[in-house]
Image (cartoon, rainbow, N blue to C red; front, side, top):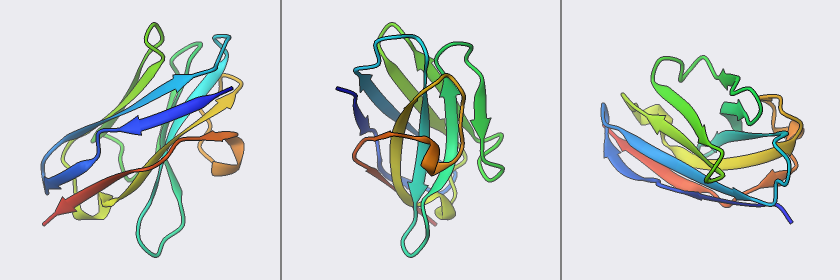
Length: 124
């Protein structure tokens, strides 16, 4: 059974940093991808970043390029999202998601497994 556990959210001032972590279990082969999505109040959920477990290829939404960095520790089955230069518009509930197939997909429908969200609040 695949399970995902997101953590690391919190309150930070604009310009600050946070590091989110996603602990994944149940992926028995090195052929999966983990993605981060976020949903702001009143908005649809959107893809933020993703990473392939096999070749480390990544995806970033234009809105976070240059500020967010995704990384994985396959030995620990953990994917992290380092978020720097945070803006108030980054405020959202952040979710990690998993899919079989090592493509760093960006769309919600491409993911089969979802963890609970972690709230990130960026104050101005």
